Image (cartoon, rainbow, N blue to C red; front, side, top):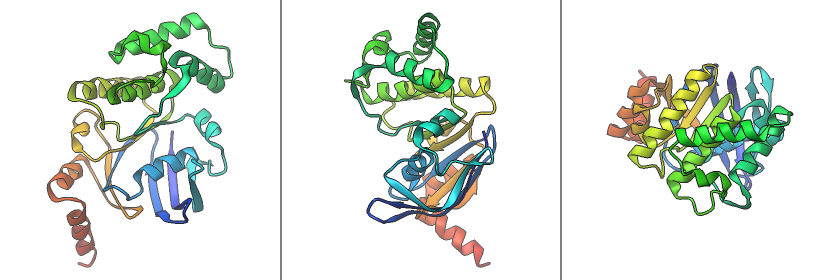
Length: 254
């Protein structure tokens, strides 16, 4: 899936400009990483792509396979194949994981999902993620640990089979072993669906040891200020965002 964000200006409910002339082009099958300090608009970007009512697009556009999605509601964007693994997944009482996923899958495919085949696939995905099998019958994220909630997001990804995956701070709340398991499942999914595009938001370069990006971007004050390869992430870890930005500004005057 090809995603193009053009000159996006986005404001919050309190009329504060969060994204300011934001541009990003993600070709089909590419993995892009965005890094930046807190409050620079990374999570706002992910929610804007999904059409959150907490933000208003003032100008600019988001094109998916050359089609604008700006006026589409969230459910239509999800049916196109856009998926967000949330930074802080919420719990929902009264709805089990299996009920939710089977209903969501039916909504996407517009076909009746057979219970036997669905449960067989869900069991397989749970095994892949080294999750407790009882989780499929429990309320969504109810009494789940932080790591279990993140695994549950990837379970949803594996079942719903999106074409564009947004990973918002996937590594937060995961220990090293769980991070390896989760990243292994994402990589396997990518191998099986090579045209799938990924946008990953993170603060720490360690996750890039497991998921190899095509591009790494630095985001400051609602804009991408520098782009590069994986090495840029390790440069940020050593020098910090402000130093990287200062160096970029200095080079532009030479």
